Structures are given as C-alpha cells and as structure tokens.
Amino acid sequence: MEQKIPSRRQFMAATAKLASASWIAMNWPQIAAAAEHEGHAGHDMTAPPTTLKTLTAAEAAEVDAIANQIVPGGASPGARDAHAVYFIDNALGSFFAAQLPSFRKGLAEFESAYAARNGAGKPFSAAPEAQQIAFLHEVDKTPFFAAVRRLTVLGIIALPKYGGNHDGLGSKLIGVVDRHVWAPPFGYYDQDYAGFTPYPGTKPYTA
Image 1 (cartoon, rainbow, N blue to C red):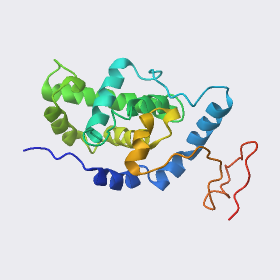
Image 2: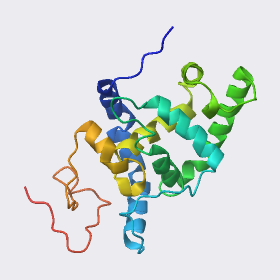
Image 3: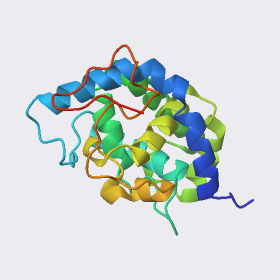
Image 4: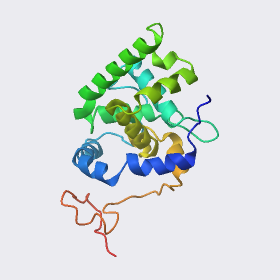
C-alpha cells in the first residue's frame, strides 16, 4: 500500500503540538542560557554551522534520513533542504546537551531494531524510501522517534544561525518574514518573565 506523504498543512498543524508552549517553557532555561552564552562569547553566530561538532558522521546520516522522512522535500522544502541535521547536532552539543546520552542510546536501539528487522547489511540511511517509511511506522511511538521529530520541527523553523532553516526555507514554509532587528521582550506575554534579562541597549516593551 502506498504511503501518503504529509502535506504542508499537516506539518503546520503538527508544529503546534511538537513545539508546544509547555515543552518550550520546560526547556527554556537551557535554551536561554545557551543563547546568552553564544551571543556574548565573541562567536559570530550569524554564520550557521556547516560542520558536525557533536554527532559522528554515521550518527548524523541516520538522523538526517529519519528527519527527511518526517518532513520530506518535494514541491516544498523538507528537513534535508533546511539542513535540520545541523540544528540537531548543534542543539545536542549546547542547549540540549543533557539529552545527548539518552539520544545516543535511543539511536543505538533504533539501529539495532532496524538491523533485526531488515538485516545488518545496510544501515537505515541506505535503505529504499519505502522500507524506511515502513520501519518508521513500527517505531513512531518510541521516545527516540519523538525526540527526533521534535528536533526536526525546531530545526526547520529555528533561526538559521543555530543551524537548520537553511536560507530561511523553514520561515518561508510557515509564512514568517524575517525582520532585520529582533529585540526582547517581544510583547506583553514575556515582559514579566522572571528569567528575562534585557540585552544592553534594548528598550522595555510598551503597549
């Protein structure tokens, strides 16, 4: 039976669940701390990462293949077009570093399960598309798949300087226009956030 490729409308609907406010709020201290470090450590974060620093080449190939099936390319850009794997690699080496051990364990279990199901001759990333999709349907309820799916979505829509969203493809996909200047707080909803510290030279939000 032919597998249906998710539409961009379905992707838009899924984004609200995968990058939910509750999940972002739970992980915000890690994200904010990493952003503060990168923004003030003298690094040129306007240049997106183009090399792997956390995952091995073999690990990245498997993650990229999974991400490419979660949001496939075609008429509209997908995860591979947006270089989502570089965001995932960057995230696991910085603001989600605490999750790296469990992520690697989940990836190893994913690879073992795939080998047991389809033979150890070729990795998942080298399998035909139909075989990849069929296997992902068997493991799409696992914590590891959920982690890759969430990171893939974030990698498509995150600021390009963190990796992913290559050439703003993800922003265009969801209809976001990138402005030249973003200065926190962004609105009434975050001006009273206890962990917010204004950057030098920024003005407080006024209604």
